[in-house]
Length: 198
Image (cartoon, rainbow, N blue to C red; front, side, top):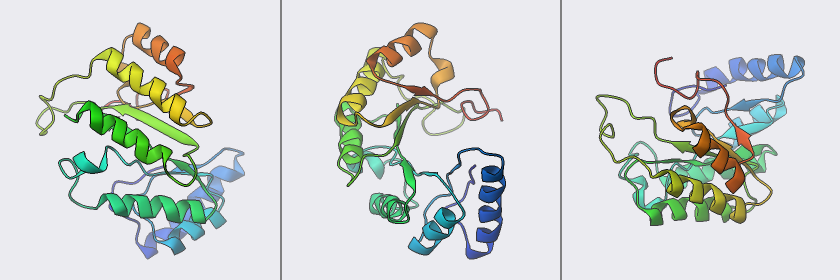
């Protein structure tokens, strides 16, 4: 469950906690992505039964400012800390193919692996280019560079679920199979989350 805002407001919290309880009542695991959280908001979500909170680091600290200006890298790390302190599992990864260097890709994985506890879920997204946006003409990621990144994530975070996420539908079957051989052990299925026209 997700929302496209910088962070939830206090008026949103009763609706969000009711959503969590409703999904939990169906016997399902719950995951939300809502942007930044205060420590109190994280506790409210955890008390409602939220299992996972998704908050991606997106890229390395060095490249981050080229992509995101509405919040700092430290803001993201603080939210992950609030989530962990509240007792929830963390889902955090990044987006590959935004014009970052190989060192930036490695830097993202270093940040994730150096969290006090590895994220339980590490989604590796490949940029889905959207016409009319600043990144529509950025160079494509070489398939084997992406596959290597999956392998490195698996080595650095051996207990995490390394997930093929957005952009997966643009990969051919061979590339997806090689990602699983390299260490991916989860896949986001369906096109609603994985493509732009939704």
